[in-house]
Image 1 (cartoon, one colour):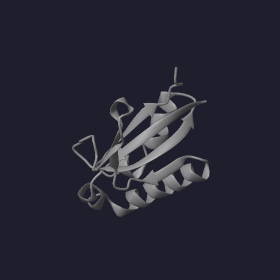
Image 2 (cartoon, rainbow, N blue to C red):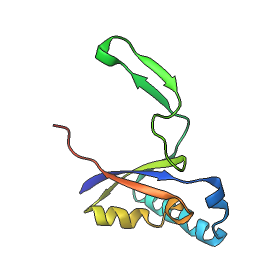
Image 3 (cartoon, rainbow, N blue to C red):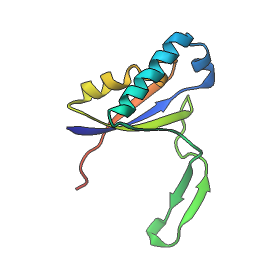
Image 4 (cartoon, rainbow, N blue to C red):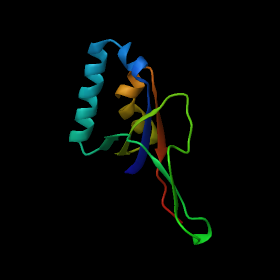
Amino acid sequence: MARFVTIGYGSREGYDRTDPALRDAAHAHDDRLRAAGVEMGVAGSPVQVRNHDSAGVRVQRGPFLSAALPVAGFSVLEADSLEEAVQLVSASPCAVAHGVVEVWPLQESP
């Protein structure tokens, strides 16, 4: 099985305008994924770490990436294919509540 990292983006505004029954179903879907072993969490406040040329560690608060929507959460899941991974996350709260989920295949390091 292949492993995938997912990044969910979503805003409170989009979440709040989604029908509560759809949100509840999306959260129940995430509960089933967790029960099946998917590692999942809500995004906290990030820091950037740099150690250019191993000359010293520099840490700066805040995200490096910028996106139209804030990062809401992450998961690491296993699936037989990218298509299956997409299917697994397509019913998650970010996908359903006017956000977006990126699915990144994890590849072996050289």
